[in-house]
Length: 329
Image (cartoon, rainbow, N blue to C red):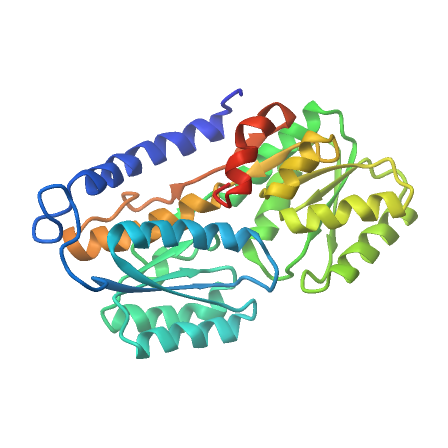
């Protein structure tokens, strides 16, 4: 597959991160593992809380969690996972993690204003915090050590460029979580590079019936829309049915993948997927907390550790289908 500039930037960043991670895997910091980096204690060395803004049924977060669980197993750590799409309740989960005296916190910053006080309180309590996925513009001000994810604006720009290549003229960008800064940045980036027209459509991502009916109604009232772009794989699968119900000839692209989305891409129902490699976000975030606690390491050099974007098309489907079915892509 062709490596675009944003993909090369992501791979360059990950190459540096991967060097540190590989060193940790080969032989852990002194006093943590044996001569071959194997854990020697009988119980978990660290207790790490991961607190995301995931809503019920969003399979994207299963992949993030899978990556964190793999790193926890390698690092002999205990992972405590919780989530809530409501910013205030997510902040309460951070507070609870602080009360539990965890050794580290992984948090998403989709609604940074809502969780800012709780994150700052965790840092003030001496608990190292890293962020993932959302909040690239907010993490440094909160005292977070590192951020793992894709630059959402760059990801949107990549999608806009691809849509131009495919000859799209009018696009609807479906936002399934209003107020999510990452989602807005994706649509902003898309509009920046796409030479056609872009309209945002807000749907209730917690209600797939609402997602389907809203997309269908939009396509029926705007038959000149030739591309629907969703911001998550589950919503792409719903959009496939909505496009059919509307009798629309619009094509579909999406951010983020799943096994179902890969199958749909192979079948020609999805034209391309913008992948931010969520498994890496969970894996690297937990592994960095382990490295920080055991060896004082921080990845990224004060910059976001990029995990994407990577543009995937039907030509890539066979290569990644097995990984997607295993829940790691």
